[in-house]
Length: 423
Image (cartoon, rainbow, N blue to C red):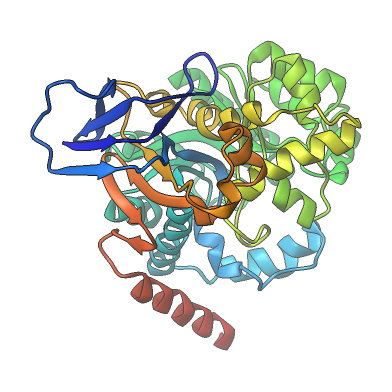
């Protein structure tokens, strides 16, 4: 068992609030949260928080982890050119080994940002899953069915395989996007949703042009079209959701579909800003993702949280819009629920030991007026002291414990970049 004591615990039962509880983990589970002084167990390690805060890890609810190889290689371009000129041609050069090594690199960045799980939509899922398992990291793989897939039925095989492979890996149904997926293939995904009583996810209403083209083709917005085809019959949601009509928002609220916002990526690609405050007030479930490092370029949940709230304040002209407490809950709890990780939502007995310690002994965390607000408005990766996934400390004070040295992982990533530049 591992004991965390002498600090603050940030919990989310009934909203974000702080306690003076100590926390014990055993294996991959939290087994005790309560006052100090209880009869002690046999601890393999006792971690003195020294006044720092222990909290649930952030959940990156939309990403393409191995896309780290495109970081700063495909910048300052609009989305359509970014995809057609840089992303798709370079992704065609990826093999299993590259996806494995690049996913390992992305995981290091997640850990140093206090992220304990990823909702990862990318290619070569076998290598992706293996990289997460070998690193000890938690991931939810998302299907990305599109018109380029030669084997349409592979997503059902993946659904069955990855939901039974390892406790650190699970799998959700989905398509890449309406504009890359035929009606027939969308209907196939919807048939799997019906068969398995599962929600479906997709890139959705990311750009104004995407929405306009869908309306021109079908007379419906992307959310309305997908709903008409049965895609959302058992829930799910959309990544980005920048250009949502009032009817789209009402649909998401009625069906409790997840709107997963990616503000840094959407700003950098000039795609737009999701109407988070309107959706929040309408009762739409919300979560936050980084998107891939090819368009962000950082996998940093602190930056995303700040942008979520700051953009809503600007868009609405209301400095009270999208308060910090709501944003922090989106990052820690909303993401977990969107991904189907209901046992990763809080610091509570029976929950998974996916935890983060934030260092408060830094200038940006002082004075301690309101810790919850300060995490969102002033927090940064420099405050991440420790990241634990499934009861294992994978990152602590700048060091990684993922079964391979960071230097070796960096070397492999750079070797792949040199290789593709020569092709």
